[in-house]
Image (cartoon, rainbow, N blue to C red; front, side, top):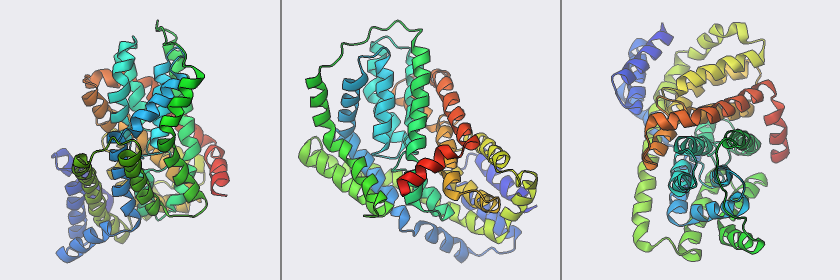
Length: 426
């Protein structure tokens, strides 16, 4: 009965068009009445406690770093460097999008920010070169979802807080899977681009490549600083977010001199608006998370999944399919906040490594950003690229399939995640 009330209240509120944060609060109130625990003070206290978290301070600073990079020229220089490296290959602009997405994901950690930047910078160039616009938009959307996988990742921060799992370990465990997703997109684009009659631009000279590298060096130093700092315990993920924001601000304003003083206010406001949405979601979700624990919902879920508990692979496949279905209707952050407190006790009871599960879970939710009908990243690419949503959806399908193949390979062969993670974490 408790599970039915939880799902009924949440789905009912969403069906009425209530914003997800308020839907989560309404679900919490419904559960409180069902459990005869309703108290406005408890409700308010859980909302405040939900946002009162030191690790969550990483969210606004990573958001700010991403905004500064887009305005301050760091993203543009990374794209230029990728163009110099692989732009001359047939279909080279597609490879540029993948390579740039991997490098940008090591800077911002936001799929939406990366997809918006890549669409604005590369989509017009790809169309002008003769590539199919729908396929190009689909590739950029699919490449954008690498952002929450390769550290720094806002998704890992939120999952780490909700699941009480080491964010540093999650960051380092996400590096190799993110590169694998990029490789899958590379192979898929290679197969598809064979059918297109495109004349690639001439190969850049060694001097031009070196110049592009010199221009991008300051931008490329940021992920190196963050990863080395996390690997050797120099700073925590929250402190890494502050380092990223301050470094990006210094490079954009002092080194590249593209960020002007009169632009700072708009950059901070944009980052603050995006952060406020995420933080309110987190705060609202903590009410439901507390009540899920009080109502002992996880034990009921464990009972439902009992047939799978003796086989970790089957259990993970069932959970991944559940997440795929949820991801078609919900955005990444609310999915993490709603499912994490329900699934983590199941994962622990089955003896699955929480860090390994966290990587699979975030990859699945990242792909959810390009699964219709919601597909936040699809909407961003369609909006920035001035395309129909149907066209972007059609273009993204082969790349989305490649990403799901990688995801289920990681389920079948956990070593693809766990072995590189052990190497990175030492």
